[in-house]
Length: 216
Image (cartoon, rainbow, N blue to C red; front, side):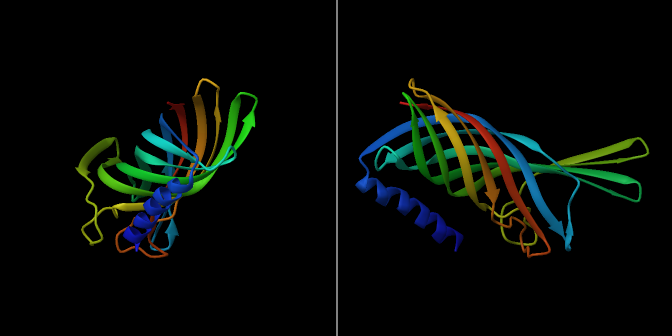
């Protein structure tokens, strides 16, 4: 089902380009401020912390007219989480950093401001997990033990995370007449990334992103 969603998303982007009047290309670079929503055996994980990740990519604005456009592209981004649990005097901090290749497809509304441009956008995204690192650190009575391993993607009991991450994004941006711009957005994670997960056992990534943009 997720692969069908990915194919449908890409087909929408390319089919709409046939009726577009103009296509503009650009690049973006910035950061993700990542949060996580998680439950284990029905208990919500509240002891979470934000992580910071890289966001870089290229995009294309497929313009239907001066107001409406479709924006798609390809971006490399880092997501992740930090969790802290304390049991029987032992505090365990778990940190995950995950690298994704993501295809966003956003519907965009432009609002001209003189020679500059303000815009709003919203739409789905599909991320493919490339690699990642999982690190655990245990502390007790002044002693510390740590370990790390590469994240295993898959749907089996031995996997750490599912590979496909589906989200919904919202954002606003401002572009100067010189084609330099800035945007702020929020990506809400929809996929349960927990292998064999259910409503009582889930893990979802979300992130606030800030990026500089430049159009050619």
